[in-house]
Length: 132
Length: 220
Image: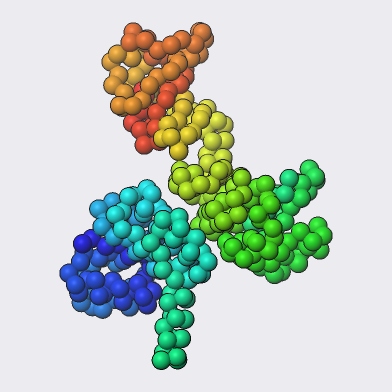
């Protein structure tokens, strides 16, 4: 599948690496080339410098042919905006959006975005570890 | 009216002052504590420190009874989220967002922001009107509908001077509405209409076709 990942931080880079190993066609987009150092030398996808909330940059990243778009930057609002662009303008079949703030995550889930909040997930995981 | 303003920078500051003078009740939400202090010192208790994208902050400032929310931070994505949270969580009737990237206008409208204001577009329109040789001026833009009204000028260097409209092939989806010659009465374009220097042509087109339209009408 063709997958565009916005944000090449720890999670974004790791996800890009894993999906690339699985044989997907991966493009990872970041506003800072520094993040691309986290990609292994074996990475066979594309690393592209660009702002994910700019339609032109998203087009360059191949969003028009993408099957999946994943928003993984540090900024909740940037993720929300890019994800909505992918969903509403570029009609990407599947859009996944990370939102740290649990309240914002709930709101955008009700607005029809596929969202997840690492905050909620990690807190639950740690609680389970403690209580088990 | 009760108006919530997100962002206490220069735009938020002057906006708040103007709205207070007009007798409106306003409240500013600003992240930076230092800016908040300055605003509160000068205008009384008008500013609450917090993140205007967070539902908790918006609840604290009574957004559910606001008639309007105006998001004027420097970041388009923050303004979008503030407006969406206001609209969907607090049912604010009117939301206005400042945008930096003019391309965001259509997206924001589709996502439920009622009005967008782009300084970039306003300056561009002013330039188009001020520069008489500028071949294309936007008269009306409805990017949510994908249509716009433009004015194309036949300047002295146009390669189409003397040609009739039937010789010109316009991009599909474009309609000519009016030809305004320099020294005669405006008329509805007909296939036999001849283009002359100084003509102003009013046309209906779409943002992605305007360049093609300009080239078709002027040959440059």
